[in-house]
Structure formats: C-alpha cells, structure tokens
Length: 121
Length: 322
Image (cartoon, rainbow over all chains, first blue to last red; front, side, top):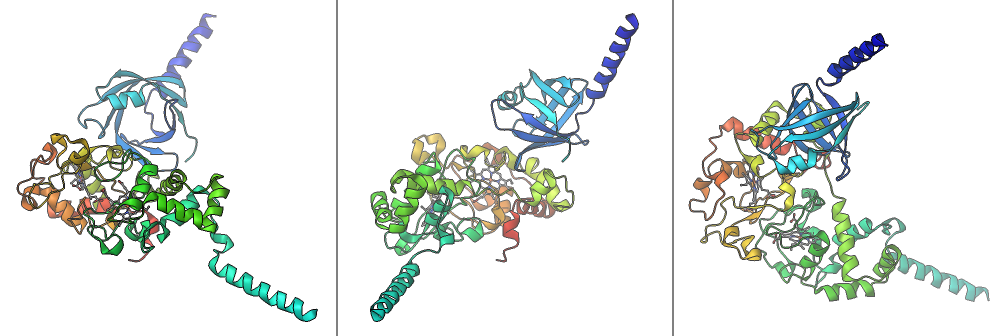
C-alpha cells in the first residue's frame, strides 16, 4: 500500500516536472468567450498567436518558471510581464489562471483559457 | 407551312441571340451574396452618369486602394481624402479616416449618395436595380426579396468581408516558422517596428490598426496648409483635432499614396516623416506625444523598416506585375 503510494507520488512528481517545463510547441486555444486561435511557443521564448486561417494576431515573448507563466507583448507595455498560473490538466492540455497582470485587455483574454497541444503542424 | 416554321425558327434564333447579347453568361450569374456584392462593386450602375463604380477608386490591382492622392468622383469632381484599401476590413470597428461609419453595411451606401463621388441618391440606386431585370432576378434568388437599401449594403459588405489577405512572407515566417520567408533586413525591420521606431505603439494587432477604432494625431494638421481636422469633425471634441483612424498596414507597399490626404507617395517618405516629423510639418497642432522626439534611424534602419512593411504584401499581388 505504502509502496504504491510512494510509487504514485514519484510518478506524479516526475510527470509534473516533465510537463511543468517549457510549454514550447504549437497549441490550440479554447476560449469559451472568443474565437479560437492557435499559438506557437518557440524555444527562443518568443511566441506568435495566429488565427485558424493562419493570420498573425499577436507576437511577443514568454517565460515559464515551474508552473508560472510570464508573458510580455507589445499590445501592452513591452517592459511589463503579466503573470499567470499554469494548471496542467494533462500533458497536452493546460489552463491559465491570472496571478497578476495590469494589462486588462490581456488578462481578460488570457485568464481562464485552456490550450491543447497540436499534434502535428 | 414549312416557310412559316422556318421563319419562326429564324426569329427565335435572332431573339435568343439578341437576348444573350445583353444577358450575362451563366457563369457570371451570382449565386451568393458575396458574388452579388462583387458584381455591384464593379458596376457603374450605382453612379448617376453610370461612369464610375466603387472599383474606380478602390482598384483591385492596388489592394483595392486608390493610386491618386485624393479620389476623383463623377464628372471629375475632386475629393479631399485618399481612398484606403477595402481589404482586411472585416475586423475593423469603424470606417472612413474619421470613423464616421460604424459598419460596412452602413458605409457602402455613403459613396453612392456622396455628390463628390457617385452622386446617386440611394433611393434612385435602388430603383435602378429594381428596373434592371437581371439584378431584380439575382436579388430575388439570393435575398428572397427585391433590391432595397438594406440588402444592397449587405451584399457589398459581405463581398468586402471576403477580401482578407494573410498569405504573406510575414505570415510564412511567423506562422510557419519559415525562416527564409523574409530577409534578415525585414526581420530587423520588425524589431524596429516594435521597438526603437515606436510604430507598434499605435499599429498593433492582426491588421496593425488597433482594431480600427483608435484615432491618433501623427502631426498632419497645422490649421494652415493642412486643414483637415479629422475625427474632431465627428466628435466636436478639441482633443480630437488632427486625429485620424490608425490605418491597416496590410498590403501597404502597394497602396500608395499614403495618409488621409495622400501626402506621401512612397513608403520611404512615410518613414522619413516618422523619423523626424518636424522637418516636414514644423508646426503641427496636437501631435501625439509618441512622436515628440526624432527616432534617429540610420539609413539601414529605414531600409529595414521598409522591407518589413513590404513583407505584409499578400502573394496574390506579388505575381501581378505593376
């Protein structure tokens, strides 16, 4: 019993470190309040959000620190980083929750969205 | 008997021939509101003397913008503003340089009635469409009603909303991660656009126009040579003097001349202006604080910025020689 618990815990923490790492790659964004779009988080910490048809919507920079997501884009103040908590639902599905972001347009857009990893682009 | 039937046959043939002469071929018959809107956009039937259409000023080859600084209406009447592109307008929240129309449907009827443009009262335009057997048939088939001001505006607006262009080198680079889609110079230009050159302080979002509802004063109003006070005419607010809608920058390389009055003929002139506005308009009224100091761009940086703007041209226009 104990063993399985430990096994479960190590398994959990292992998978947690794995998935709480960089969220690089392409994701589909599900936002119940708005149109769907996609986002490309690159390894160089830049990102591009684009419509499903392939039109660039926003470009900017991001960072992750464990389950904290920091974002900076020109639609807001380029020197300011908004802060969100990443809730990892599964390895391929992550929800964003507002920690702090003075850019109201962005926090309205980001808080509560769920992204799902795109398998292949 | 034979003679008569022959005669009937010949007459029928003539009738059919003359009929099909004035009729549009089957292929041309619009099946959708967008196709009908397109037909209307290109048809001079909507101008008093049947001499110009929307496309006379919004020229397809130039991303549906005008190549003359200010547009020429019927009977060569000269307007006072530059005709912007009608592409990539579906995400815009207002129309005209001063934002006086809030929907494309509403906007579409205004140039028809404008005495300096098509000069045909909307009622008369609607009557003409009702008197035209073909249009009557198309409207009945598509809208299940006769032509009226509302479905006329709707058809044109729906057509305009189809004119979105994002098949560009910029998208190829940013969306497809194709690093060779744009030059190193254009990439530096994008950095400048977002940074040192301060362009993205106003031109941001998918169409680089902050949603098309933001009005700013870049210094092209001095109350003397430059008299168009822009947004203030609509709002009557002194703060809005000299403010104009932040324009869309998609396909901007082919929509010269630039600005509400068509004052700049080349992108390079636009960049020179932003680099040091005082040099070109020394006593502006109400100019935006973002433009209060010169940018000090080097010649290479100016070129980089221009190359970035050129990367916003849709591929359909690159293959069409000027």
